[in-house]
Image 1 (cartoon, helix red, strand yellow):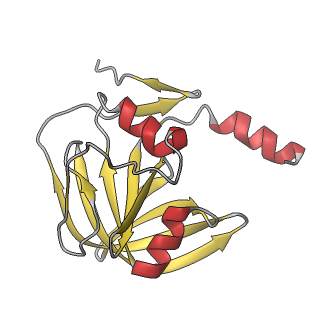
Image 2 (image 1 turned 45 degrees about the horizontal axis):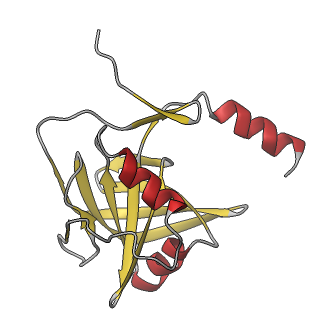
Length: 162
């Protein structure tokens, strides 16, 4: 890692983000990973963006299936975030004991959480070791209440209301 890369890593720890799990499936093979690099980029048409490492299993499944799902995690879902962040090896089923469902594309989404978004891949922008994946929102749903899981300064934080 270059000095600039390490400096960027140190600086970005001060950027607070929500936490999502990005999922994909091809046939019976499904996988997911914790992602904080996620944002809405257009409401009309409805598009979102995620940034994934090009060498990840989830990235490969998204490219092969042309679809991905996003589950926005609730503040009580730290264990799920850790599980999909790789504390469970790739060979194991990260979905074990978790309830999932599908909306339009057949991509697995986590039942619990604040919101779920089902997407069709429409564009890829490569940048270094990662790619920006732009998805057309096929369907989205959310609950009425809850607190987001927040990641800041290398740890989970609570959202405080004033």
